[in-house]
Length: 388
Ligand SMILES: Nc1ncnc2c1ncn2[C@@H]1O[C@H](COP(=O)(O)OP(=O)(O)OP(=O)(O)O)[C@@H](O)[C@H]1O
Image (cartoon, rainbow, N blue to C red; front, side):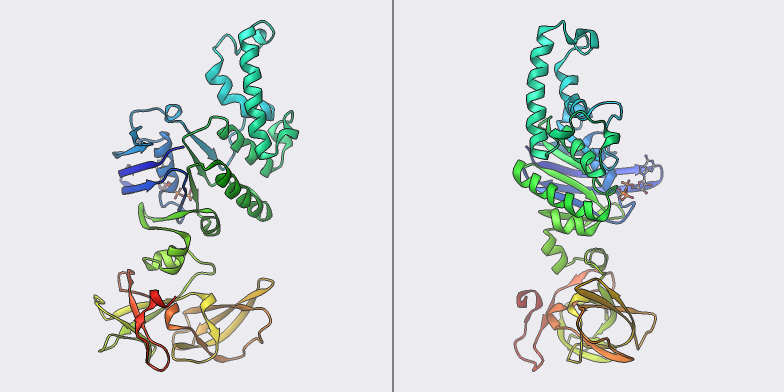
């Protein structure tokens, strides 16, 4: 396996800039996910790494060596697609063995006629069968060897596609939304299988998804992309706990973060809907701010940090529920609160409170500002990030 380095990758299609100077280092053995809304350039970046698309400028290195001049099959990386890309007329065994037969057998040895005539072919095919069996064992697909892809479930087909990638012992795996054709239950199951496979193989994996739960649960690090830029690169915990911009805060976390318009008061205190919160900001470029609070950090009740809301409806998630409110001061602003299902359903107007340390503050360009917070009695001024 190998690490990858991308430097200054730019790509335009016609007049549309799709990737703007992307720099990215992916460590050997890392599971890195490119995540972001549809059309943000994730698949294009993956295809450039694979050599299926060429960049306008910039370079891709694998294991410290530039691969810009190499064709896709020479880069020794395996790509797993959303539609599996299996050959429907071939058995599972033949689909997995294909990359090996194509490289190890010559043109004549691949002819059906040669099957029984060439001793060399028989020896190579025995070796290939051993390798295919070893991979199939890891993926638990040996029992389907003689079936065709059409006789398999979506999850089984995805495992065959993985097997075909694994037999090549690639330097890295590139995966483009590999689970998006599966139903919800199977997707959860395959998420676990891929995570275990990554741990077992110690493989470098670059994974593309627009599903933030996949990104959060599987990755060592995420690169959150939008409009051809990487907005934030970090561990799932970093990105969730310290989103760099409002766009990242809105994209990561489910349901999406609540955002409120706020201002900086004369002493640096944050003022939200006429209330001075026990948090301060320094160096805010303009008085206008946005305060973000995640639905799971809000609770029904009053406190020094609170907003008054009117209850609208409840969404049942089983053990938890999401309560939907309108902000009384601006009814067009929806406020969500994620709570245990057992709590009594509120009626009419209620205060929703949150802790100072759960406030994410952004400037009027949507960039994160570090905040200082103090407890309700006004003591213990510390950086909010250290309070966690
Ligand atoms: N061959 C192409 N010719 C012209 N435009 C393209 C081409 N391929 C991609 N694009 C455009 O480039 C942008 C980025 O596409 P890309 O497929 O990389 O996005 P994505 O983030 O992977 O989206 P999704 O999650 O929907 O797959 C889109 O606006 C897309 O329409």
